[in-house]
Length: 328
Ligand code: DGY
Image (tube, rainbow, N blue to C red; front, side, top):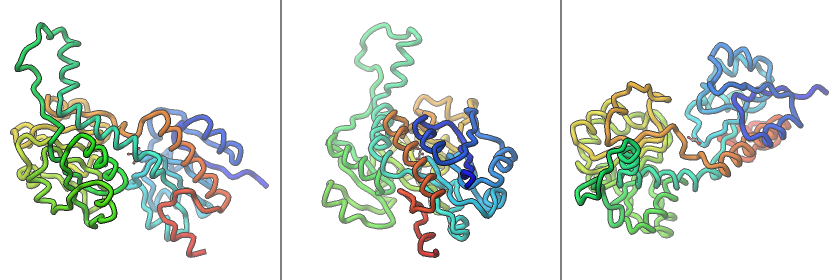
């Protein structure tokens, strides 16, 4: 029997690629940058499986271009807003993703962003690097205390919860907003469910951990920034478009809020001439919250295994749409 054909849209850890190569004929996109849409649609023609990234739009056009033999879509990320999951489900195609394995690493990084912006770590480094450090000064680089501050978490999912757990270790008071109250988590970590307005008014730090959906698109915009404390810092390690970037710029520039630390932006990558990059109170890094060696290795393994399971018609280890198995 001919081996199944798969398209892998970027390099992943070599052992994960080797595992796929044992089971399938692999066409690997070697470039650092994603293939153009036209190239992508050409490359996936007739494949049995695709291992993709959040940079690829996987919609009906994509699935049509691949053809009816497409058995599995495996995404190497927990977020999957780039994939039309409803369409994949309609066609009976399981969609794999990589939850859990990145939860702790992403929660750690959220704290790295929080602390770096509160205590002006990057500004301080730049000051030293550019030869401006001439003396110790009582009024230099005054930041904000983390100990005793109030942290507002938007989205009490896996990552939000791990951020809450870390926050209690820092002596923070934790508030959270979620469409569903998480009583089972409240007994594990002291935190209070509040409405969004209360969270905006009372938090010294607000961190976003919600999926990007129609409802959460530009969830943080002018009206929300106007309700925040003037000293508050916004952290986004979820998806860029959860924040309206123009409104964020206005809020930072006009001093409506104290600062922002962003792992994700709209668009991605953020253009180098974007006004947000001109602000001292806005820290931006290139979508690296899950980027530890161990976590990216595990994400690679899981994405590869999901792909292989899909090719072999076995349930995926982590499947976004397990309802596809009810249909067959
Ligand atoms: C995800 O998994 O959704 C992240 O954004 C990348 O780790």
